[in-house]
Image (cartoon, rainbow, N blue to C red; front, top):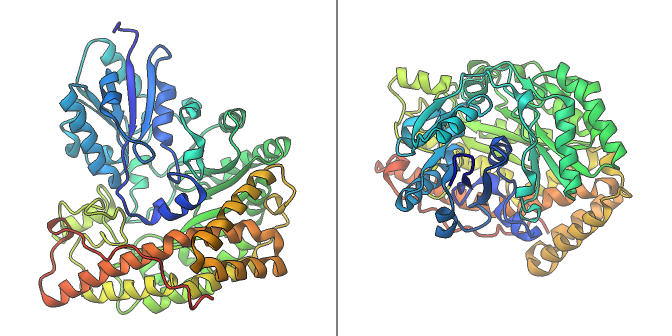
Length: 546
């Protein structure tokens, strides 16, 4: 190996097996292997010297073989907290082969000591610091710590990701990123700790170049803007959206778009109209709680200034359906929160609601407060056991309300919102409210062939391979065709997501039952001290929905 060449293996660590977000059964049903590719790693790939040879292994979609590691001069890996066990496993495997590892990403940024065994650690955003790692490697250094200055990365210098390293068929969506940072101060959120409160955006030219690269590689389908709050910088996004609309029109709308935004999106009719015209079909919104006292105490005040259900309905009226997040376990909970949360989910008609138990993430205002109060459980990770999110691994602190009461509330919420009859009733309400007169309701769009192929595959899976779904699925299709045929794609997507969420919710209920029993019997152990033995995943009974 000369100093101008290097074999770099990029390894996306596995997310832990069970998660609300991995949509495992849904992916299998439509022929994909995982929801989304490793955008961070393929962006890193584009920042490496052109003379370096780069390979990518996404351990969520393929095996990581010893031969892959043996080929490499340097392995680059890292990711989020739920990937921590896998990232550590990658480091140990590389050490066994004598191959140095560089680890980066959000988890090493907030918990660098966890990765002390890696030869190289890169904390913070890669722009402005990765070149120092490259220079050190070329100079013969084989270890080092590289800390980026916080919130200073110039995202206008970020290159087009190496989309060519991906197998598009492996994923249900492909990701891009427009901005980093969020202007709000939510106590439990780590985004503002990692990326800051002043959203930084790419230029319109950058974003259109990324979309063009995907288009030229032949990709058609869902493109997800992974921004933690797409509208954090409203002035910038309003300047970008007209150019995005023009690009989509010129290319005959090859992409359906999704993203995450704050609820104040509903306050701006012009912004909603532009998002609809650009082809956005869904948005994730963190609602957290219907209780204004809780929202104020956790510094999510932006959600107290509006009628939440009415705000969601305004987004539906723009032809965009909402996925939402809710949290149970806040200190300010005075009594049962199950009925208010379930009531809001029903009033707003939100089928996909990510209800989780509060988890104090590393380096957040919440964690620092709990540490001061002596209430934090050190060592408790979202990656404990087989489940990788706060559906079962939350409450990593001494709660003010009795733990058993919180768990029972949470159990009632999950049982209610993911019963087949309740879920599908909300889907029907959404179908009735969506105004699909925008581009995503155009049933003659050029990607119709792809849409028809996916429709045929999903329909065969749900009527032949999974006969328990046949009657409720066909009833939903008939309802949609009678009431809002242009919303057919949205109805199918929401049903397909339930194929994962239904069985996953039953698994969560089994683990929560175990935790309640342990707490009430006095033998409860912190999750890091015991194995996870929830009931096996199983299909929920579809009889009530039929």
